[in-house]
Length: 274
Image (tube, rainbow, N blue to C red):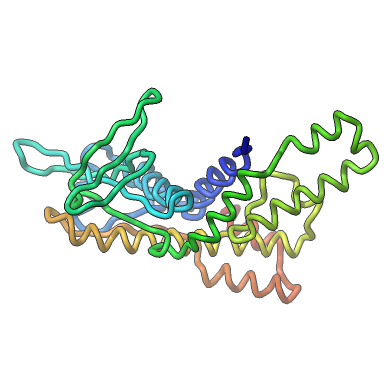
């Protein structure tokens, strides 16, 4: 039986990294902005929807793309006397969905029973791996390898006394496997990676990870904005994410590769310590 613990941790961490990549502690309310009159509509049902829920819905879409190669969210309309007063973009948790003609059929699971729900295609927004610059084949390979990773291997061997003399060495081999497997996203596997990686490479991984995730997020938002423009008639506007500056990150990466990178400089920028 496959052990999916590492896969679940990987997806959860990527979700948190994406959210974190847009956070600015100095002005939290501007992490995600919405232009024009769309802002009023998105705040109709929940005044903090833009700052909190909106980025979560987009992140849920991205995580599903990593798992399945495609995703969708539904445009929810709030009406008074048939007049549209508010809008939300809501991710619909589902096992699978089929986009056919003018309908979207989503298979959902309730209490271990499956149910098919139907939505109007014109009220749904879609993203796929190509839209956000994800290599679907590579990502599936990563998730498959993480699903097969046996986190209990070292513990079991240690209990049997088979690693009494070489536990640390075997542990290092297992950790390096995880680093190599997730290299596309530079995941740290929630481990004390500083024991196995030198400081310049740790900094390199930090920058590469944020560049990757910022790129995915921005491409996803561009596609979502384009579809909203075509599908939402009652108002105009677009979503704007306040992400960390890619050029600054690239310059930091250049310094690291040249041996001049500063851990404090990078840490202060990424973790907003200034």
